[in-house]
Length: 339
Image (cartoon, rainbow, N blue to C red):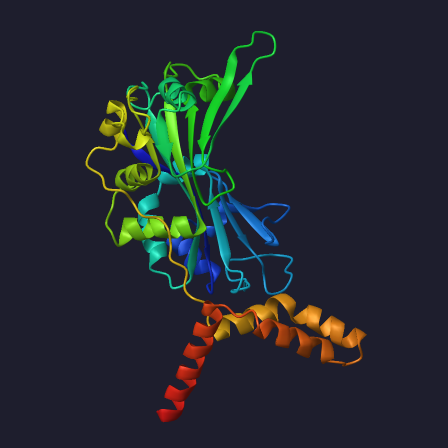
């Protein structure tokens, strides 16, 4: 039986303080040690003594000694990163799925990255060599526009040290990684009894895709195995070629792929973007270009003719989304007056 596990969990809790985060994690503050430097723009970083769990935050003022009661910047929040190894270490004491369920109850939490992994210790269904051959021969269709392969070899013997395939861009919010886990373990450790044919498949979800994944898990009450296989069914299909038919869409799915994805529906992970309002546009101008406008105004000693001309020119380039925002804003004002 193939089991799916969480292999990376990263999130930010906003508008909160450290005791709330520690209580949610189910860990003790005195089990963490401060590191010399922060990370990801946060000034302060702590590491769990029992594994690779990292907590990052910025205090409201520089403190020589950080305690559990130290006030943090609630706007930047508390960022938590649990790496692949950290997930295994944390799971020895706590339940990662239960942690996600508790985090989901927060009004202000951003899931920035979640990795799901499935291991086939005998490569009976998920087989690196079979997948690689199918990809090279073009016996697949995918919503991902490309696949890559990264291979490393021993210089003296030319033996493989690692083999990894990527479906989708590694900088995108969703991609698939498949690699020869036996080679990776042999390269990184001297442990015995490593399976001879061990293939791991991982899906990396970031930002909105991670948020949507959690929605499926919590609101949709889907298991880890279901959401991983449902994502694969939506984005990738390996095929049994029919030489007399050039249209791949009519080729049947490979039997091993059918077996892997049996009894799951395609999982929709795209998030519909809300239309921009006048308030959104005002906030964007204030954040992004207000300093630029102020700089030009100072340089031109308060002359605003250049700005008026930009506004006049811009009025001729309004699109439907801009007209809709104006209409909604005026309607909102009129409704307020009527009330």
